[in-house]
Amino acid sequence: MNTPNVSGQPVDKPETKVHTPMATMHTYTIRLRPGQDLKAELDAFVAANQIKAGALLTCVGSLTDLSLRLANQEAPTTWQGHFEIVSLVGMLSANGSHLHLSASDSTGRTLGGHLMAGCRIYTTAELLIGIMPDLVYSREPDPTYGYRELVVRKKVVRKKRR
Image 1 (cartoon, rainbow, N blue to C red):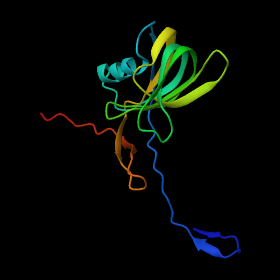
Image 2 (cartoon, one colour):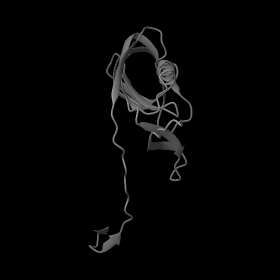
Image 3 (cartoon, helix red, strand yellow):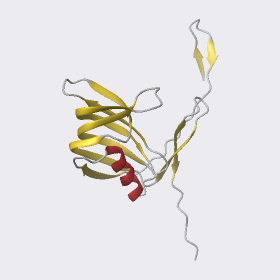
Image 4 (spheres, helix red, strand yellow):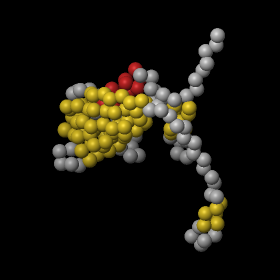
């Protein structure tokens, strides 16, 4: 595809084809209780249900301990207090989940980053999780930055031999 540059001259741009397989979605609704670790419980849910492709659709609740890996940081940062879960989004898979959490304190100040172990439930966490049984998510190195990034594939169904 030719796109004009600032001077109006056409510039060749590589064509990028994006193939997104369609999939049926099933949902689970779960509630976590006081003292439970949000990340540990999500990881356990993914493992127990052998989830290969899922998404965190919504989450509301509260925390007493907050642990996030902030942008471009190696280690998590932690806070104690009372926090409202403003948002929890991301992809779930036994092959590697990727979740971001935003939480606000009693002044409305909001913190956000990668969900880490150590986020303890205060009163509740109510989660809606979508599962796509026809897909498999994996994480593979992307040459752009070297991070392991999402790869989506259709689930291969093997026919039984008779």
